Amino acid sequence: MDVTCEVLGGGTHELELDADATYGDVLEAVGLSTQEASVLVGDSPVPEDRRIEVDSVQVLRLIKGGATPGGT
Image (tube, rainbow, N blue to C red; front, side):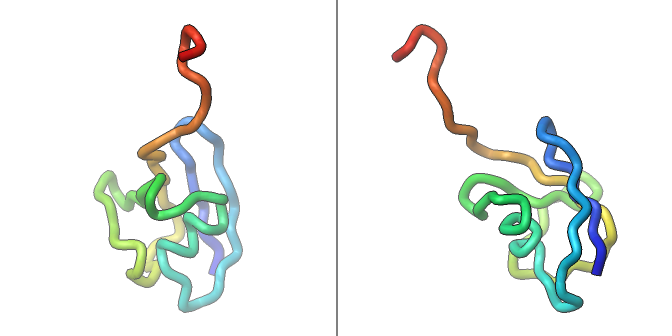
């Protein structure tokens, strides 16, 4: 199964996943966990354990690591 995944603010990935892949597998394929991102289908979040039913998704990062301004 081919899926286009747009990581909002982070580029687009063309993924080749198993036919029975879940939305959680999409997150894993782009290097994110279910704790740090959600998969969106048509602007609505979908459960990570649901099988993929579309050929295009968006991923919204919920948290992003890095230093804070001012070094604190």
